[in-house]
Image (cartoon, rainbow, N blue to C red; front, side, top):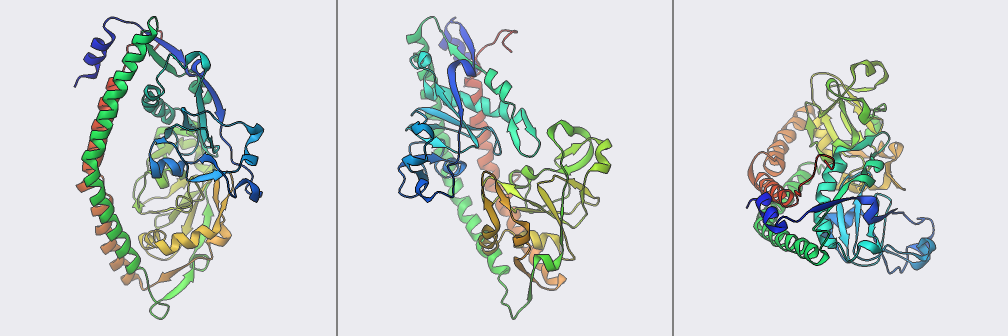
Length: 421
């Protein structure tokens, strides 16, 4: 399918008008009702959406995992049905179409269509077009204390309206694009479902054997609190404005739970060389831990730094310095029992934050170094089979998703004049 040729035929010489986002939508931030007021959270009926809803139930939602009471609603006003939520901080770009009146947390910007455009735009067409907005958001973020979107540019992001001079034809064009993308989405989901199910089974096997290998009895090995094994060293602040193509290697906290695995020997980002004296570093063999995250599992996620030189870390990271096998510690921090224990030391405020003093009290097994190395070698093989994007099932799933995204974006590539680009 050639998306461009299809669009030309669909438009049949008709024009495309581009409107800035803020002209079409009401933009409002989400919020979290006070967690200290039980009446806000008990027996509620108002859908309150979080990132967990998208992760568990997809991107077209008619119900939420968590509800709040009517007394928790500011001013008694909900966001209207058939609005879109998009994450403009933390997990940038994730979005969903909400088909019921609702509220959402502060990670999301909520976009409801203005009255003057309700009969002009198909909301599902906009939902699909927002995948392009999501890509724009990821490329236009600030990374100070917490990643967030450039909202001035966000408001000016252009939305296409095909054949604006003929509303009926415009809606018909939008509906045809939605029909094709719905069909393509369903087909892609069907093709990947079997692969995904097999991958889930493989991950379950991996988790089972990982937990079993790390489930030492107290009599078999000594268990020690992390604070007795080593020390935690906090990183120093750097921002997106400091990023360069050739400079000092750094690890940003957001990369730990989105892009790194158990260990890494190379960085994904670099900052200006002249910042060297103002940064704080992880040494080879340290385990780098993030202290904030969208979910409890993200908070305290670890990556073993096995590079040959020191690496700078963000101030929302800790370098754990210790005498053990770094990958063994990183695997221990993935264990189901460790994650359950870690949850006790996560402050659930506006931003989930690690309580490092409590975290340092969590105990892990300390077998001889030879045994640590043996377990790491076994788990490395499982990890490669299960998680590597360069081979096996994950690669097949990723390729199908890339193919889908390519044709979807091509189908939405409406022509722009030089002034509109």
